[in-house]
Image (spheres, rainbow, N blue to C red):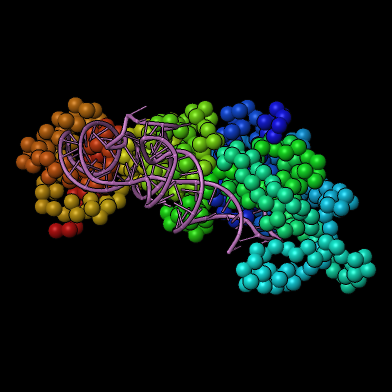
Length: 484
RNA sequence: GGUCCCAUCGUCUAGCGGUCUAGGAUACUGGCCUCUCACGCCAGAGACACGGGUUCGAUCCCCGUUGGGACUACCA
């Protein structure tokens, strides 16, 4: 952390199951930092603990990152000079550096079984003493070790933790000191031969020349271990930045328990990536200032890692929703359409040009893409279904009269699709039916759109042709007829 | 249990010793606009966790307490 080396940050997910918004946020912080400071952003996959069937989740992560607008300069798919970028392909590296440590007497094989360890641990806990590894195998006599080997026991490799204090100079928290006494000798290579997380990150970050490690706060307490390893291995120390966690509404750490927390879920609910990334960077204060709704470029400029991370923040869906609506309003219709088409089924049949025309008409009325569906139908489908509320309005006594008058006014109209024509027609209906205000407008809305919420009637008129308008009125009238 | 982190309206924050009868956003309530919803505009309600210091003066500095969180794994 003393040098002025190249800025390199990294995101290293362990793709197990769903891709979580807290994880996305960490990725975003790294990306934003890299883009702002002109550094490199590395994507590394931590998959040493994964079963082959879980490998598939890697795709989900990559796809999720791309969706939200994050790109990477080095990674599993794009390659890079310091690869490979998948931990499962770096195994010999971990072996090599573990050997360096054991050869120098800084690490040793440990033959304790998991059962033994757990028993000791529970005893210590029961006595109220800090549960640390006893160091039992640290000075194992050679003959005893050979005996265990011939028994067929596979050792894990433990790192020798000395004493003294370790200072983490955290970019966000400032100096934090830990006492080495409180850390037991920890495992760097498991008995399966797989590296433990705390060892693999250090080897990888050092070899990949990561200059700033941006990760969530739960790793802060692990950092003294990392520092010890950096020093033992003779690696240059990077700088560390530990940002606070995202919380659920119950103030506990956001997790799968909070249904909303998965990227896929949010995506399916109709949030756009511009809004989600904006929210994730904003929550906790990372964008500062008074302007909250920002474009990607503005975000990169405004992002401040120091501010982003001190206090844990609650994930507030209401605010996300508001932000989504704001983004929807100034996103180009082409992009809205793209995201909307991405969402789901049966939409390829729609006329693209028509959708593009009509999205701006309804966009002000929605907060999420999901809500777009019903409103778009008003303009793209010949036959529309009446909502329960609409049916109720149509059943009212005056509805028939109003709609009959509307049909009569529509019939001779040349082109009803203009503001003037619309006003003229409404006027005629008003006179003919004798109704005005809500009694006049609501049946028209119900009959023409099938919904009681939606864009202004004038807009509905202006974006439907005469035959569709008449068709809708007919359908409404025949619905009314069946109710009598 | 031990270690570490954190602490301003319900939520996200501004505030970096006097400018604070604490500002903004969101959510909520009321009103305006209006054919509906949304947008927009106006108004209202709503917070410095507690106790000690330091100081002429604390939201802001220090120490405790309380509360929340993380770590303490052959998970990451």
